[in-house]
Image (cartoon, rainbow, N blue to C red; front, top):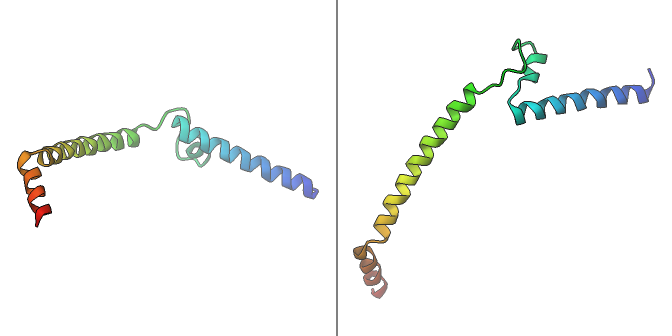
Length: 90
C-alpha cells in the first residue's frame, strides 16, 4: 500500500470518528458506545444521565435565585442604606 493510500485511510477513519462523536454529542445517540460494544442499539438516546444533571441544575438555579432575592431585600432596606451613609461619613 502506498503512502497516499495509508494517509487517505487514516483520514477516513479519523473523519468517521469525529462525525460519530459529533452526532453523539449533538443528538445523544450512542454510536461510539455501539462501536465499542457497550450497547446494543445506538439509536436509543442516552437521557438517563442528562435528566439527572438537569434536575440538579434546576435545583441549583432555584437555590441561587432564592439567595439573590434575599440579598436584594437586604441591600434595598432603608436601614442598610442609612448604615452605608453613616459609614461613608466616618
